[in-house]
Picture 1 (cartoon, rainbow, N blue to C red):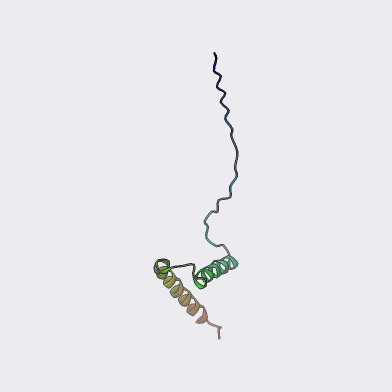
Picture 2: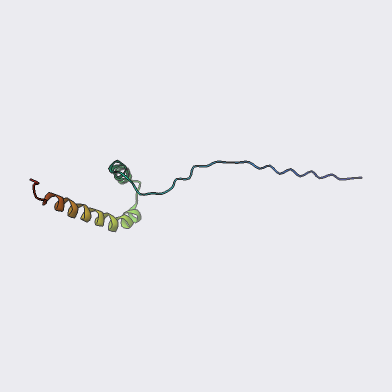
Length: 79
């Protein structure tokens, strides 16, 4: 009696799309990011822990925006 064992190795290729995190490059991309944040907040996608984590950086962004906006409005020739 002879036992024959045949082993086959099947290799399959799968291509997957992996999103790469990158900073927005244009005003339009920044607006998209802010719109997505707005959507997440308004659709209750964030819980209290999420809000606690985003509060400090969001406060810094708001402060930086106000400072930049104020500086631009104080430029000579602006009304």
